[in-house]
Image (tube, rainbow, N blue to C red; front, side):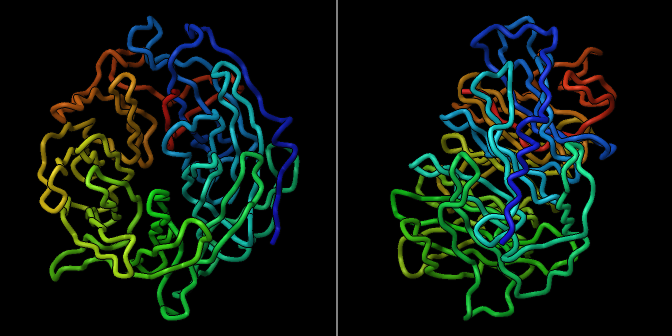
Amino acid sequence: MKCYLAGALLVGLSVVAAGARAADPGHYLFAWAGDTAHRGEDFVAVIDADPESPGYGKLVTSAASGIRTHQVHHTEYWMPDGGLLFANDHKSGRTVVIDLRDPLHPHVHAAFADLGGFSHPHSFLRLPNGHVLASFQVEGHMEHGSDEDIDGGAAMVMPMTDVAVQPGVHGGLVEIDDEGRAVRSASTADPSRPGDLLMAYSLLPLPDIDRVIVTNSSMRDQDRAGHTYQIFRLSDLKRLSTNDFDAPPGHYGEINPEEARRGPDGAVYVQTTGCGIERVTDIASEHPRSRLVWQFPGSFCGVPTVVSHYLIQSVPILHAIVVLDINNGARPFEISRVRLDGAFWPHWTAYDAKTHRLAVTGYDEDRLFMLAFDPETGALAIDRTFHDAKGSPGFDFDNRTWPHGLTGSAIAHGVVFSQ
């Protein structure tokens, strides 16, 4: 195992406050973004998210991470209580823990790459003890030469597009503290499924039943499709089972399972790249079950959000966000949708319970949209009071001078609201 803590990241981070209003304590949206030209660094942009503020929708500040942009990717899905947010650049295999306790002065608190014998983390979920449980795509170290980082250190740039991953490759789970140190780990390898691709994509801890559900699919287009989920015991990370998702004839909704969210009925709803929603039940038993309960059109559906008895899903081919009523989880139905810009392919959704707003980023877009959501009715609408300098809805990442020193365009991926 190699672990690159990259101490230079801790001193090289740049923070500059902008002129936009940011009254303390304020309410903010933190957008994890990368330089479109791949010349600069991944960075966090702090945006005023208080609808009552005169600066609503305006940039407050930005801070560089020290990681050269390769594939800016996931943050945690919700702002943790401690204010330390995990954020990852997937192809570089590097992650930072950003201190956002003072939103006007964000800075890197810790950094890591390989941990616990695994590389290329993808998703980060909090445990009751405050640590993060992360899914790692590959067991072992994936190395691709060397490069020169922005911070002047030796870059372990490990683009997954340049490494051959064969069927049967597996990943793992690693519990990580806020200093970026591995606490314990477990492999997704299953000797009874030697030919399956068991690359851990995402996961969901279920502390009340002492379980973790893990979804398996690859971030790389050239790998075979994933189609399984695994159940681990949370208390000791013992793998209990590897299971196939429901694959009805004539459907493709089980292909490449991704994000898992718990519904109000206790079932877990898994979104797939095949734009299916798989409902997993009996998770604490020896025989968990899944059923494909919904099929959206198209493919590459992204990060969902569950609010009350509604599942909110990005559907790229529709350029829309669609809301399902899952009050009866076995028979969901569409309750509303909102179409965004016709050229925008939505991906990430993040909900703010304080303002009932939903932030949406795209696959490869330089814009972020803000939607208003009614948790009573499930209705969605574009929030047009959140707009750019030209009056167009959303926040524009294109061709601007950023407070931390970058001049150019950026793409945001993971976004979370302050508490």
